[in-house]
Length: 520
Ligand code: UDP
Image (cartoon, rainbow, N blue to C red):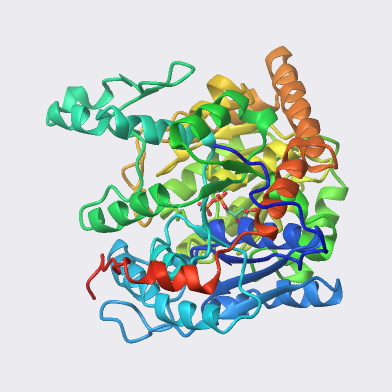
């Protein structure tokens, strides 16, 4: 695959290419794409982020910031079907789902955005140069085909994960593992992922593959197909972090892979950083900053499990006791949904009293980027969501890895075995998004891993040194002349002149059949 500019050299300045970004309606997917929109507009392109009305309202801070900064970035709200059977009223984001059963109707309602998106794009003049669509939004593929607009897929996880996933499919690993199914003692059996440049072992529980639950087969198939037919991939990573996996992934995929990250470094000023995600309470943000300002450099461990994973009380208590027993200063984010029950609130208040002066519990949404960039923060207990990992890497902070589900177990392997900037807590099997009672992580595991990360011993110092070096490399990647900076330049230039004519698009239309992969 080539990333050379696709078009002939223009004689007159071409108009700013317009990128249409279609994130999945989940914060872990929207946040990096909004960062990408910012970057594109700062670098001379136009960007529109396509979403639904409630999600657009949550992105108001982004739109306001762009307006003040005079960036051509718009948030477009397409009408969202609210009367889908099985979807709770007002549920327009994955983080509002409270049951796995809400997902199929949510994806079915999202699929219905195809018509409004097509109408919106047809009305634009000049035509958009490129659609960058989350790989979980395969319904954008027929729209792009019908309009003749090039389409890249945005893949959330690392190239390491994506390469494992492609290789597992190509070599029938999932089928092989399925064949030996059934015996409890085989749960721990290890399988080598074929075709990887390093040895990667998985168990039946941690084998790569999204949407592996029953009922999601059609969505997975459509998503894989939409990746196969895309013109390339955009990945939030940087070459210096996973060089060999980027090149192998690109070769295996057989199309250009644009590595543009860490995208979090696009949110350079405090206002941009604060508008990432939502629900940020200015007062709480000030209190967090003031608390951190009083701590010694590298003394605090930050603890957060991303935007989706929800801990039930039993596991929540293990985290709290583990932090208390570790003797380390901690800043712990507890979601509102986790702290809703009165007995949990009571328990948290007692923990705060016992650890006063050493621990801070933040309820709700925390300013994660500001926290990770604070000099007092010297470690991060993370669920290994790829954004959290990259945000930690970008700020030179080593981690305790506690993977929960999907790509997180392989992100854990990358961090611990390949990059050697993490200490595993010891989680060996996935937990369900809404039920983690089966998890076997104990307060002892938490205390041991946090102490190992923060104890200042030789290994901890070496780990921190490596993390810092990656942090510096991440910054260089995003600066002029750096790999991600230059990759973005190439991407913008590639699409400045591309985009087929309307005639081509029309010709194409007669061949295209809409895929209808989810029945409401
Ligand atoms: N995040 C945040 N505050 C919180 C929780 C999460 O700012 O209290 C952000 C975090 O910085 C990251 C994203 O939400 O950008 C979570 O993405 P990740 O891939 O780590 O995990 P997911 O939420 O997708 O499981």
